[in-house]
Length: 103
Image (cartoon, rainbow, N blue to C red):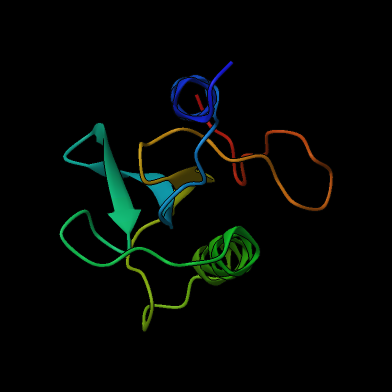
């Protein structure tokens, strides 16, 4: 196989690294669960999945403590997603994780 062919095979089959991460969560608005992101979809993503998971955990802790300075509603179904909105495994367990899971 020539080098150019090999590079095409690699480009087509290589799993790319995410460009960034966000916390995805839901909250109740007018009796409906609304999905939101932090940072928002129009904002720059975070660079590290570990940093984003720590941020998600802190949002969860702050929302359950009832701190009105940070959030006004309970945040549920808190997880981390990549730039393509795919759930990212929790770095501690290597498995999917959802903080404050509610159906």
